[in-house]
Image (tube, rainbow, N blue to C red; front, side, top):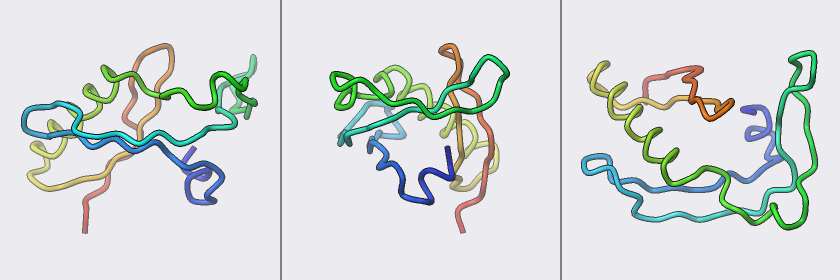
Length: 102
């Protein structure tokens, strides 16, 4: 997925969350034309989204808040600002990579 962002193949949705009180302050949704999933062999595959799904919010508000909670815990653990990559599979959030903000 990171490659898609770096190649600008997708425009990610934007969520601004108050990191102290953990509420969504603002969000901007971008039209999405495809999604990444796994095939029957476990390989990543790109699939086209149906028209009615292209303008929908990708993450639920609950998932956004949960990711913000992870951000807060990880930042507190490292005692510094961080960025991280995550993935969601079967409603479970996985932290893939954490980097210090330089």
